[in-house]
Length: 347
Ligand SMILES: Nc1ncnc2c1ncn2[C@@H]1O[C@H](COP(=O)(O)OP(=O)(O)O)[C@@H](O)[C@H]1O
Ligand code: SF4
Ligand SMILES: [Mg+2]
Image (cartoon, rainbow, N blue to C red; front, side):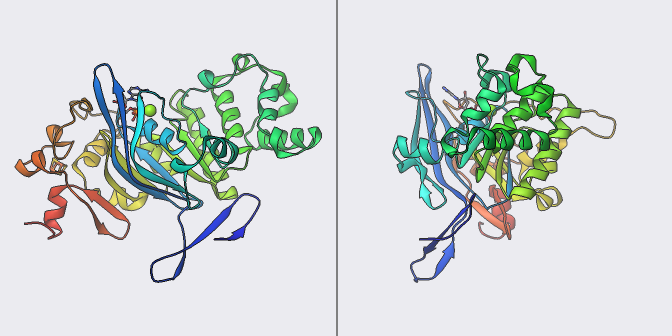
């Protein structure tokens, strides 16, 4: 039952088995499993992923290249490239409704680019080179019922919040006439224009220099606070995650290794992979250590804990049995046999 609405948000109230009513999370991903069927064999890209996001929460999804971060972002929009990609199992509840059970037309009308928007990694690869910035932004408001003047006002206000004054002729320019930082800010504007409840930001600052990156992170933080929008922030960089997120979830070879509120994650890092990622942060002299090895082929992912070939703590059980996800303390989850044993849950 929908019990409260505002122009941007819908809160959904459900009943549990005991008949008690409770608020659902904005997004709940359960047991999400995604494969890609390729000529080389099946790539087991995501293996029973669980995560959840509250309204106004920024969740940083962290992991090396090939961990499955982009695949997870796409699965949430149900846009896994087909025919190779296949969602084998799982549920993606958004505002209480399973996106994977929606008709394509319903998903296009209500979800994609509307209540959930995407900031892509490469702004030049995503903006249409044939149309001006103004045309592309106005297109996003076509279904809003706003008049031409109102649309322009809304666009120019948002652009000026993003430090892109429209009176510089920006709306008449084509994407190639902008710098990477300017175009990425236009992409952020495009992701905010429909007033979404959730933004999926897939490594949005990776192609930018550090000064522009810092500006964009600051902007995102401010917009999240002002608009109470939720963000799934995909990055391979823990330092960036620490600046933007309320919670960090670490993905490795298609499995969640650890998930915790950001402060707790840095204070009480529990998973050997997370610890390695932390060791790779630049030290005070700017030196970066290499984590050693690489993400395994997901055509033949390692049995048991997928991290075992690179883990210095690995033992026999790790090679045979996938560790269960356990809660170490409120909101701090980890998947590691050693942690389960220390917690007294296993011999
Ligand atoms: N369209 C695709 N076709 C085949 N394999 C894919 C496709 N997209 C992703 N993969 C595979 O899925 C795995 C996860 O990739 P991806 O989600 O891009 O990881 P990340 O974003 O963390 O770098 C990789 O092994 C990658 O090769
Ligand atoms: S389960 Fe074993 S291999 Fe995996 S992280 Fe823990 S100790 Fe290492
Ligand atoms: Mg990616």
